[in-house]
Length: 226
Ligand code: ADP
Ligand code: MG
Image 1: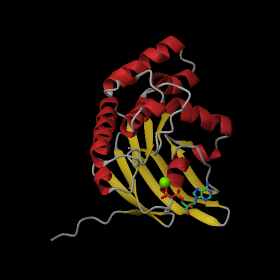
Image 2: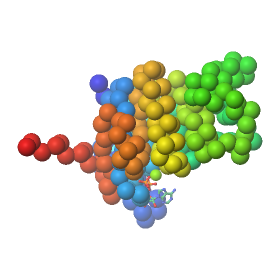
Image 3: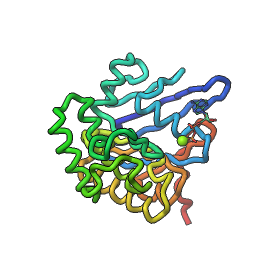
Image 4: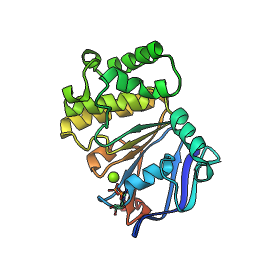
């Protein structure tokens, strides 16, 4: 079943067209990799799907609801209540420690601080970070910070997790550890994942992949029949 869809989506930044008629369909429960070269429009597409950016033309539909027609308030509620994000460089809040960073989505959703922090600790444990919960991002390695960002993306048990190059800043071993955690956590929770990457070894974790080129989505050609 299709959970999230973009149809004929166009978006430009000034004179630069980033999306030029993008089409994508995300199935409930799948891990979908969005591949493509740098500058092809992957992040812009992810932001349109997640209700962060509104396309100039076209439709974005989540669970039967037109995200592109929602006002800012409705889109921000959707993002807060239903979606999770993991950004390329983690983007932790530097003033907060790991536990507080992970708790943020719950605090924004109105969960009591003690409960939110307890839930954050559960996720830090799960991702092997229990000893690091009081460290700020400056006191974490790249791989640790990326795992904290992953915990923050998952803590509110989102229906869809958007991950934009979640291993972009990591060496390949650490990147594999983060991807193993991302995929196993998503499977455990039944979370749908839209994963942007330009690395084939990261895309290999997905159930399916599409390629973005010049602002359009190309479905991968099926294997030729021998
Ligand atoms: P990707 O994630 O595939 O590298 P992006 O979606 O970030 O690609 O960018 C697509 C195009 O839009 C590029 O030409 C990029 O330079 C441009 N672009 C993206 N974000 C902005 C922005 N905030 N301001 C101006 N141009 C942008
Ligand atoms: Mg990008």
